[in-house]
Length: 68
View (cartoon, rainbow, N blue to C red):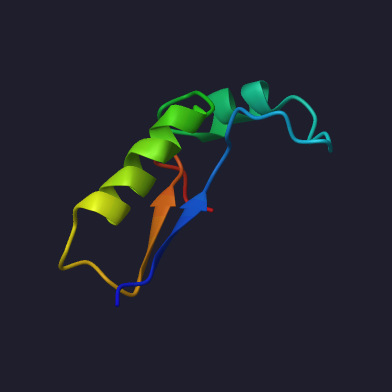
């Protein structure tokens, strides 16, 4: 059995709560200078489910290069 996870950074979503101007914060703090899109997170999830057969026990940070 394999168990992996992702640690998302800023992501463009329709969450019920508001975190202010996340786009401006991302431009200032994230090396890629933008908020991540859901499909970018989905790519990693699909890879971890369908590939990466020798990866287990890992948490992958998906942060655009920001250190959270």
